[in-house]
Image (cartoon, rainbow, N blue to C red; front, side):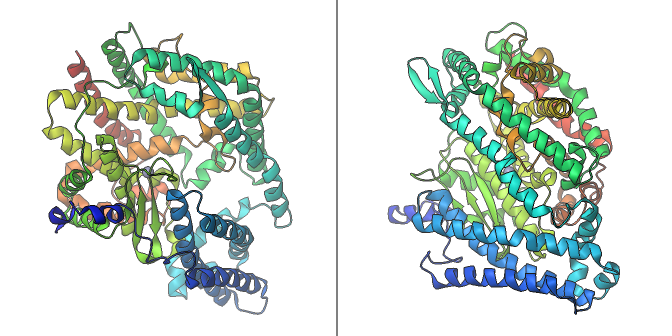
Length: 598
Ligand SMILES: [Zn+2]
C-alpha cells in the first residue's frame, strides 16, 4: 500500500485525482464504441423479441437462449447507463450526455415488454425444473426463474399491460411530477427573503436557535399555499396504488409492496414489535436533547436537527482516506486493500463543483467488477462517514462479482446492509478514541439519524397505512391529512416532541409518499438500519470468524428471500429478538448520551 505517498498528490494532479475515471467505459461521447453499443442494444432487444415469438424451439432451449441474450443485453446497458448517468451527475448540462440519455430511455421503454415477455414465457413453461436441471446457466439463475413463475399469477394480462403503463404516465406519474414542481417552485417567505423549500428546510441544522424557529414558521406558512394540490397528488397516487394492487391480485397495497421487497408480514410485524418497545428510549434521548437546548419537556420539531456540542474535527481527503483504511481495515485487511484500491483507481468523484448534483451515491459497474462513487466531500466527520457508507455499497458490489445479472438485484430492505455496517464500524472505532466533547457531538449526530430512521419512519408507516385505508373509502381533505399526520407523530414520538410544536405537513414534505411505483417507501429504511446494526452486533460477538459469513450473506442478497438471506448467517428476522438486539446497540448510545448531556 503506497497511499501515504500518493495521497498528497501534486497540484497539477489534484484536479484529476479527485475526479472519477470513466475512461474504461468509453473515452467520450464521440467514442465509436458507444454508438455501436447503442445500436447493438437495440438489435439485442429485437432479437429477444423474435425469439419470444418463436414457436418452434423446445422450451428449455428457448429459455436458455432468452436468459443468455438478456445477460448480454444487461452488460451493454450496464456500461452505457453508467457512463451516461455518471457523466450527467457531475455535469448536468452536458449536451451530448443528455442526448444519449434520451436515446437510452427510449430503448428502455422498448425493452420493458421484452423482460415481462420473458417472465410470461417462464410462467407458461411445462417443465421449468427440467430446464433448470439441464443447463448450467439456468441452474445459476434458478432462484430468479422460480420467482418469475411464482409471481406470474400477479402479472397484469398481456393485452392490458401497455394501456396501464400508458395511463400511469397521465395518472400516478403525472401527479408525482406535479408534486415535485409544487415542491421546487413554491417560494417561502423567510424573514425578508424569498427562498425555496429546500433552503428553508436546510436551516433546521443552523446553530442559531432563532434561525431554526423562524425557518419552521416560514415552512409551515409555505405549505398552506400548496396543500390543496398536494392533497390531490397524494390521494390520486394512493388510489392508483389500490387499483393496481387489485388488478394484480394482491389483497392489499402492503402485500404488493412486501412481495416486491421479498419480505413477509411476519418479518415486518417482528420489526415493528421491537421498535414499539424501544420508543420510550428514543423519547428519553429527545427529552435530554430538549433539556440541553433549554426546553421543558419534549423537543419542538424545529430543534430535532439542531447541532449539539462544539464543532468537531475536520478532515483533509488524505486524512479521510487514511482513517477509512485504518478503521474499516480492522474488520479485515481485505477491506483496507479494497478501499485503498478504490482511491488509487479513481472510483470516486470527491468534491462539489459547478454542475454536479448534491448528495452521494454508489453505482455498480458489474461487468467490470468495479463501482463508481460520487460524494460532495467538504471535510466534516459526516462526510467521512458518507464515504464509508458508499464504499460499503462498493464492497457489497464486489461480493456480488461474477454472478449473473439475474441475481444481483438486492431488494430494498437488504440494500443498505453493507453501507450501514461500514458506517457503524467507523463510528464504533472513532468513538473509542475521541475526547468527551467530541464524543457527545458524534453520539448525538448518530442518534439524530437513528431517530429519523426508526421513529420518524415508524410515523410515516402508520400515516401511509391510514391514508391507504381511508382512501379506499374517500379522498382525504387537507385537514384529515394533517390530523392523520399528527396522530402518527403522537404514536411514534410521543412526549419526545412538544404536542403543540409538531409537523402536520410532513406528508407534503417527504417525496417518498409520492413515488408512484413504490408504496410504503419507509419500512425498508428502518429494516436496513436495524439489520445493518444487527449484523454488526454479530460481528462484535464472533470477531474475525464472521468475515466470511458476512461476505457470503452479501453475495446472497439477490438470490433468496430476505428471511432466507438472514437465516444463512443464523439471523431470524421473523423473531423480534433479533430486532431487539439491534435496538439494544442504539439504547447503549442513548444511555451514554443522556449521561454526558447532564
Ligand atoms: Zn446507501
